[in-house]
Image (cartoon, rainbow, N blue to C red; front, side):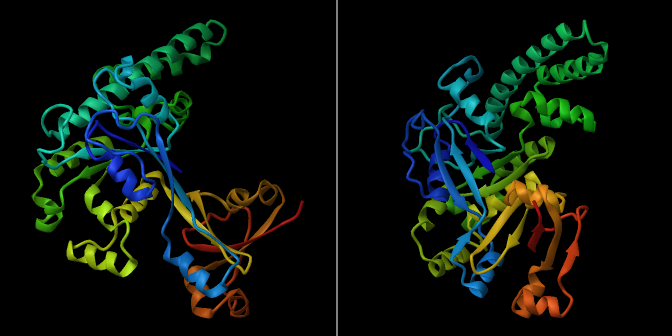
Length: 364
């Protein structure tokens, strides 16, 4: 999973990236500090995997990972090449989802590129640039379809659909707000529009906001109102707090977050939001050689899940031996679970569940 962190210059984008990836990306108080995208890979926290590692003492421990991409700050006119616009847009296109960092705090020492803090305006600025880029993509698609229809009249429904999409974009609506049928969803995916990508608004707030209570922040309310219309998620976060806890040990970090009324770090909360937004789950494999988490789409069937490990597993799939994580831990291992009849033998139509511990049987 690749997540693109975007936002206007000086909203705390690179500070947040540094904190969650501990990658040391350059961060400074001037526009376009980030030119080439910085990339950081982080492990997905999973207490179930930690418990399995305790049980099996494996030679190898492999959690699921997420790739974060810190993309150059955006300004008005990016879709026309202003600032680092074209580079910015192409980097977003490669990501599975967007984390849009929106500034919701005051600080006279940190210059805002627009001269004031206004989340609604900032979100609109970026949305407009993404929409303008999508207008160009959809216009090209319609032109190609109109040329092709001379030899294939069945393409007319696609032309009609994309003309509706173009009309919505020209009204300032994002493509993710457009209602589609399953067939239209496939057509839309073929164009790879920026505004169809799932989005999380990371409302970057001050430490004081978390101390006093985030519900008092009027800017957060404005972000939530926009997100509700966009089918988007909102994550209140403080990039500075995330930076402060980077070097703390586990106990110190938990105590610090508890004082702020937080149970988890911003990174943990962000990953959960991303999994939920993208409809992702994890299944687990466990044994002495390796304990590992595998990320799949919700609704994935057993053979396709096996294919995540190796294509031979999917091609020669026989069955999946599945036990729940809870049963496995409570009984101390797969052998005891088999003796008690807790291990299920599932076939090709089995839909994987989050936290399944699986052994795939295959033959090629």
